[in-house]
Image (tube, rainbow, N blue to C red):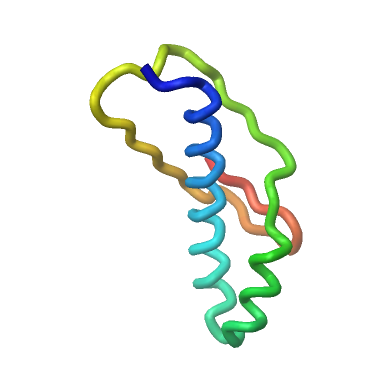
Length: 77
């Protein structure tokens, strides 16, 4: 069984990594230092998880799709 706190932490990290990769592609012309500054400003402002079933099994797979990238806020599902 996987605890709900673990599930939410993994999904938050997965969403952040997906957004980080999308921003790296969008701003590929920037230097590594500029990207590091941009990435350091990232943070979760809202997280919603619907717990429909308990996390049971031998494997846990997390995935994310970036649905919007704006100037200051990005959305990931």
